[in-house]
Image (cartoon, rainbow, N blue to C red; front, top):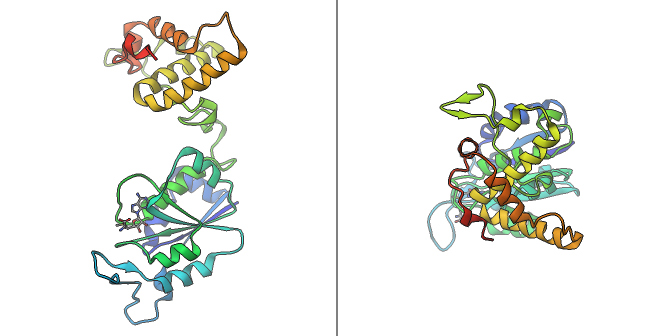
Length: 278
Ligand code: SAM
């Protein structure tokens, strides 16, 4: 069981959000536990003060070190990893979420206002994590993103039918984006579901989906596609698969064999021959 303690001035934000969907089920199944703790609990004065003006001036209030320290000390033990949600941290990735899911205990500190006293970061924080290069008004949304993303990697949280193995970015997908998905009806707004998906040949469907994933990644995330292609090329060289075509050439051939209608349905209409020039 992974235990997550979230330190926040707005506990309801966390408590409400984690009660839905996959996260809500994970909490009920005892594979994940999320609790909240407010520094206000440790504020000694009548006004329950948890922030003050920054020394040296500047915009915004800063969360006080002492009330934060007491809150951290309440929850932290020797196996805890203390994380400060911060725009200055390492940006969260799928891989990072996977690693965090293996921890025993996470303490997520959510800042507010202008942030928290640096001495808390120096003395208690093991890592700073950001959810992207923009500034939020508080760490709660970031903490929720972290908890949601990692929960998918806790064994048993996702049912077999919704496994994360082939999701975008996963090892199982080769680091690619997932292929497009379709459900009923077979035709919608003049776009038909690609024929192969209706045929029931699961081996063929699997191979087809892998190729389409690569094409979708080429269109949407050329950076990820390049990394994937380098790995594929390396393997191709090592295995000296002389009969098999080079990965990019093979993918181009697959794309050329797709009908205009299929390209349209798959959202690949913008792809052109030039995109396969390496
Ligand atoms: N003054 C800080 C700075 O410029 O680095 C930003 C403070 S921000 C207004 C308030 C709090 O929101 C931060 O203490 C942090 O906990 C959270 N936060 C803001 N942006 C974030 C991001 N991209 N990822 C994670 N947490 C973030």
